[in-house]
Image 1 (cartoon, helix red, strand yellow):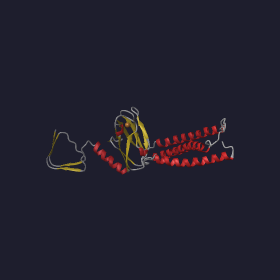
Image 2: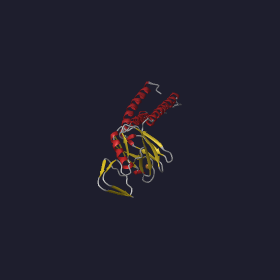
Image 3: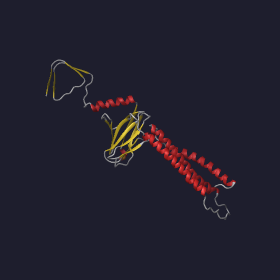
Image 4: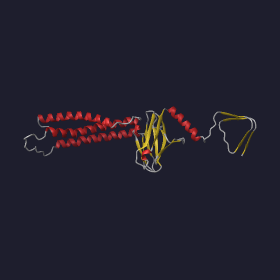
Length: 279
Ligand SMILES: [Cu+2]
């Protein structure tokens, strides 16, 4: 610790250099590690946590490296200096400081992390429910009304609750723009929640090495306005849930009609004239 005016000057210079290098390193790391678009409420929360960590990483790196390089340059052996270095027995104050300060950082970040996790994983009433089924090497999405889609289509600004089910091995559900990520565990359904805030096209990809074609286990995700989602879902219901053939509107049959085999007619049907049905 500083004892003389000269020692204090060294500490002041080093503190200033650490502050400058911390800011520079933070911006370098931020540029070197670009994050995907912020597609969900959770992305905003998690990015704050990531940037706080980057700031601490930049500070700790600068603290160690700036002190070391400053000492190497300023206290280097001078030409003709054959004197012994100063003898140190230890410094109790310094040891207490470098134990207490990191401890405070760890405890603060532990609470910050727990709080972030609670915010990201909380459940809400009236969540939008969908089930994601993963298998080597594809995804299926099952909606509560029974519609099944190979692509994930969701409404924007709704809290989404995805139940994750694996049909074979470990997989991992990951949409980078939503930031959240969760394993699919065979024999045990897991959960993931997020609230999309951007409409557009994204991709869900498996983030767990799950076999030979793991690299190809990805599928489109479409986030759309509620009205567009409703239209898409009603189209799917018509295509998947009405048995394949649909007659809509008013149908009028006149004249003589013969139907053989099994026939079903839905909607409003007016039949006039002679009708014979044989099996
Ligand atoms: Cu995989």
